[in-house]
Amino acid sequence: MKQNSNSIEDLQAIRKLMEDSSRFLSLSGLSGVFAGLTAIAGALVAYVFILGKGSFHFEDYLNNLPIHEIKKTNGLLISDAVIVLVVSVLFALYFSTKKAKRDGKLFLTRISKRLFINLSIPLLTGGLFVAVLMVQNQIQLIVPAFLIFYGLALVNAGKFTFDEIFYLGILEIITGLAAAFIPGASLLFWIFGFGILHIIYGLLMYRKYEA
Image (cartoon, rainbow, N blue to C red; front, side):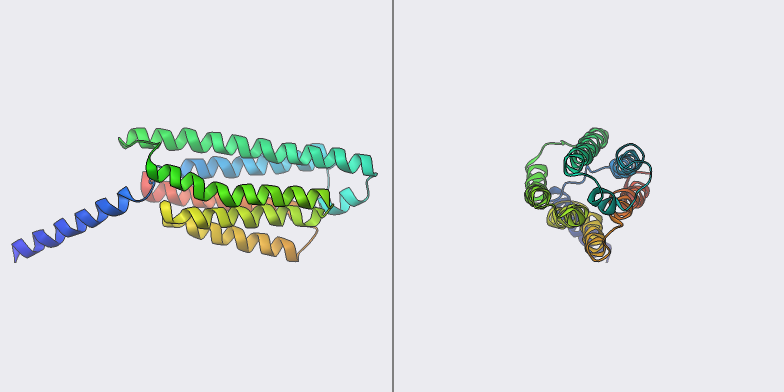
């Protein structure tokens, strides 16, 4: 009986080892928390300094501006979003490489490269689609598109890392669709999707895998 028990434990250990070797497990929950805080900070910068202190409904704000001011404001908003993205990626790299080093694992592996590729394809596609929306002045669809394509990227990458990434992606897609159906509140959906959801996800991940 004891031998059978040991055999089952050995099989479970082998199975876990195979699963771990096929997934990237160095993602840190803290990167999600700091990405969420960065997204909220970016939204507040847009609210206070770009949209004239006052408009969470930035589509209406932009539609009431002269054409040259619309282009300028759009440029500032995109710059704000790009800065948020870059800072979030830097946080992700910092905390994840730190976690990999602590766990005695390599950060750059075959699996991490596949994760990056599967994450990048929907993100790049979404970026190009958002550029098309800007050219066609479909302002009300920009934030929904960001959220939906980001969610698709997470779903696509979920099979190479923690299962929670997949479910976060589903929530981002739902948030993006809700933003598309409720025009005029894009900045609030941005705060919820990129900010609050990331913070909740990051705290749960940190508590489950790192604390």
